[in-house]
Length: 151
Length: 151
Image (tube, rainbow over all chains, first blue to last red; front, side, top):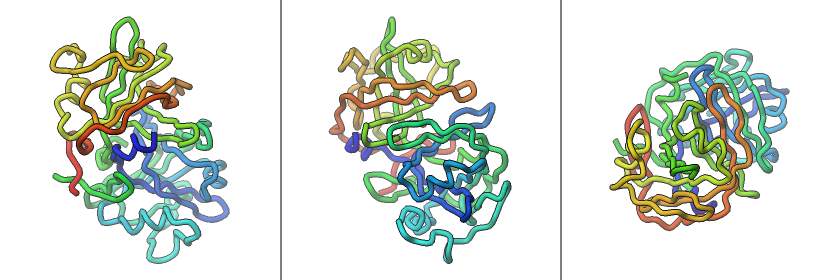
């Protein structure tokens, strides 16, 4: 299974939420689920440092990273780091959700369900606000490292 | 929402199942959900021609396409086509699931759940067999067209 998914390529996203403090993590599992209503999903480990906040959040932030944001992707995947300290640039967006600056696109979504899947949860959420107008092209992840589109 | 996900890039997969006949469709929503047990998920429209078979299948096939397989991706996205006619090359694999030849990697998975999400379902399935050893690099989809990795 692991070796099969090393062959798969995925776009890179950062998911954020605001509990007692801002939390966030790098995800390669973001997908668009349906258009009407506008639904997205992503996976999260229940052992993740972000899970306590995401497990209770009414809203979460979804950010599509650009190929210029590999450092941000690493920061939000590194344990122990203060992911929201400089040089991370962010603000409180709609519904108080942390919104990262400089991304290709972002959404704030209302959480509809957290579906158990082994030691993970699939979070299903409905887009309520967003901005698709950031500049750049998407960051990708494949075979354990970051990559970009050819064309 | 649609304009946000046009900025996102995704690997391309074909999902198959065998009801009264083989069915399959191109998906950009395949993700690895958990490692123990090995779980995957993908989305499917309940209006899809594959849905009647996928809604009842005990097992489904998951195939990660290579950048040389754009034609196969188009075939499995085109309505009305006989997707399993030549030049599609396939065989019955484990649990009778249609397995496509020439892919980067494939899995046969046992369906665990079909989670309602608007007019789609998120299918959660556990890997039971597979082969990660096909040659090539992954096909990608971004802004309405196929693409490939830069490096």
